[in-house]
Image (cartoon, rainbow, N blue to C red; front, side):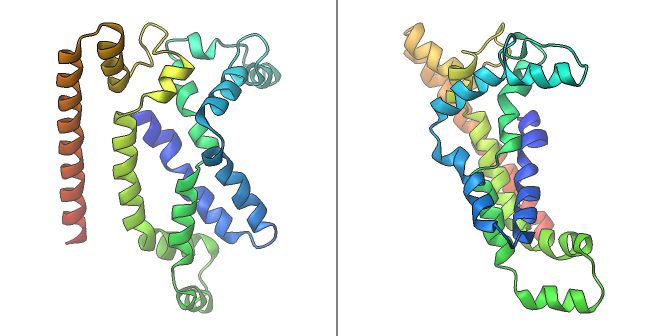
Length: 214
């Protein structure tokens, strides 16, 4: 969850800000950013498993070129989580368009007034864009936390929870309880515990947001 918030949560906001500034070929770039959503997850997993391959993967080609050596990305206890989350850094998917829609919903008069007052692009971003899309960022934060705590398909297809359970998740553990061990009682109990944890975190987030709003 922490790695996801650090690596994959902020980039879609930055990408949306940049996309909003692009006037020429804007539709082309938007189509590129929506590709991760359109492409099935299984295809994306196959592509990234090839990129992370220790022998002929593109990632090691880049690290060798930079003089950083070679790595067993998906088989390294310290790099496996990073390898799973990093694809979210490059492609924000639908989150980019949610932020972009919120940015484009800001009245143009505000930007024109800021330009007349001598505000540059950076000041417009920090003083106009970010404060006006904070409510969307907060909603996306809740969805991100819930999604990460329930993540199953990505670690299941990419690493099967390995190496040494380094990329195992709660949802994957629930799946193994039910499907591998046939222990439906433990699977059900774990599911309820996960539900209450998610509920508690969501309530805390809502209360914090209410305090900030007040």
